[in-house]
Image (cartoon, rainbow, N blue to C red; front, top):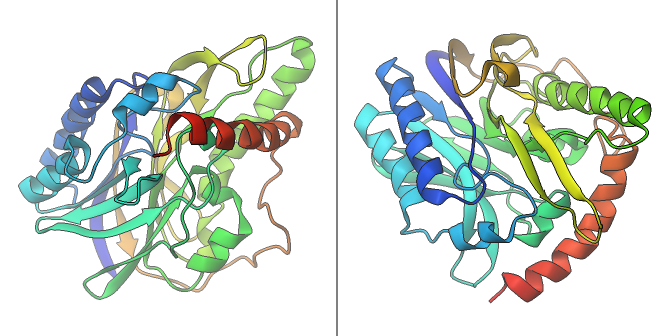
Length: 307
C-alpha cells in the first residue's frame, strides 16, 4: 500500500464555453502540480459543465482535441496521474461521457459513464466497460456522479480496486412553489449529493478522489413551460477506504483545489451492498426527472447530436 499526495479540482464552469473552462482547469491543475500532487483529478464534464443548453454540442471533443491534450500535458509536466471526463465523439460517431486517465507517457485508460443522468441523455450515450484501469501493480476504478448512487457500480468495483477516481456534476432542486416542499426536497438532495461519495468507499474497500462543480446555472427545462434555475451542489473531497472525509471543499468555498495524503490500496469492504438498485433515495422530483428527461433526451440526441 502506497501513500501519495493527491488533489481534486473544484470548478466553476461556464456552460458550453470550452476555452474558458480549459483555462480554468489548467490554472487549477497547475496549482495542484506545484503543490506536489501525484494524482490530479478534474470534474465530470470539465470542458462544458452540464445543463439543458444546446451550445454544449459545439464543445464536443475529438480525441485529438485540446481537452485530452490538457490532461496529457499536465501529467507530463508534473509526472503525475491526471484524469477527468468530457463529451467525446468517438470514431463510430456516437458521443460518450469519457473519463481518461493519463500519465507522463500519455493515456493509460478510459471509462465511459454507463448511464446518462436526466438531461445528460441529450448529449451522449452510455458505455459498457468495467471502469478498471491498470496502473503499474495497482488497479484504479472510475465512478462518475450517479454511478456513485447505484449498487451495480459498487459490485463492479468491490474488492477489485486500490483507488476510486471520478467526479460529479450534480444539480440542485429549484425553489418552486410550494417552497416548503421543494426546499425540503432540496435539503434531502444536497445531503444525498454529499453522502453518495463518502459512503461509497466502504462498499468497495478503496479510497476516493472526487472532483466537483460549483456555481449558479440557469437553462431551459425539457418539455416544460418554465426554466430551471439552481446551482451545482455536493463537494470536492478526498475520502479514505473507510469512508472518512480527510479533505473537503464545499460549494460555499468556491472554486479551488483540495489536497491530502492518502493510502492507496484496497482493504476489506466494511459494508455489504444492499439488495436494491439505488444506494440512496433519489427523492420524488429527481426520480420523475430521471424518467421523463431520459425519454426526451434520447430523442433530442438522435435529432441534434448523433451522426
